[in-house]
Length: 350
Image 1 (cartoon, one colour):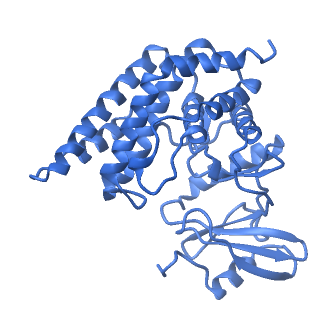
Image 2 (cartoon, rainbow, N blue to C red):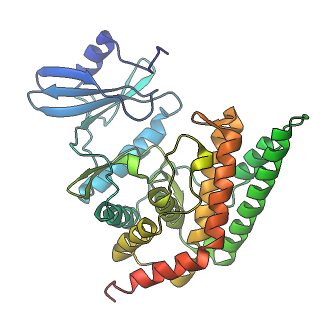
Image 3 (spheres, rainbow, N blue to C red):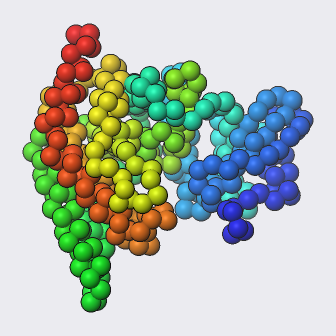
């Protein structure tokens, strides 16, 4: 792969675009965003503006692509904010298969990135609720991937792998103690959620990666939801807890040791408020939120660290210590968070 990520060749672009009826091409320029293994080009023609994407290796299973496109089309039919898929001229398919690659062409959506405003946070919560409601009874064959970060043997396996380094380095002893602590918190949270009735609640298609980077905004509202690569079947509560965490987590400093323990309580509350404006939870479901957030915090960190020793370019050991602090903060402040959520929901119409 060339430095800077995967890219299109001129010949490849010409061949791919020859399969679409989008008029005379006026301009083509690369878009650097998202997965660097999935190159993207902005295409401007006399009929409009489009985004061309070649799916990354490992993300190019044609059945999963077909499933994702069926979901996007269903949402588009419900006027949910997703980009319109452009079908190929030849076979009228929503994706194109050429030379062992899969290509997608979308209508380009103008928008801005998440600005951190409360208005945008509320709308992201509301949009997730609509996503769940619109897909509540949606079915697709073959059955899509099932499962989540909750009560996962895979997560436990990754934690064991990370903590199993055996040598005399004192840093490994610290890492082992960190993973043992995370394992205890993960197990406790899994038990708590199960005791609240998790297994009895229905499962459906969820987004699986609901975070600010997967959305475009206009005027404080969601203009487009992006990235449907993580779709699966699970409880919508796992989607909600992950979204609540992603919109309220506080970090961003170069060194994970400098990241604060706390969550942004205002954003957490407003995200859940937006969701419940559209789709109200019952009391037992609300009680799962702190534990599900602990589970997803741990789960998101351990897979890349088990594989590489790093989280992106951050030390795996340092990152896990930060995760441990944040999980402990959620656990210690669960009553405060629950009361804040309850208080905010009193303003909702009965």
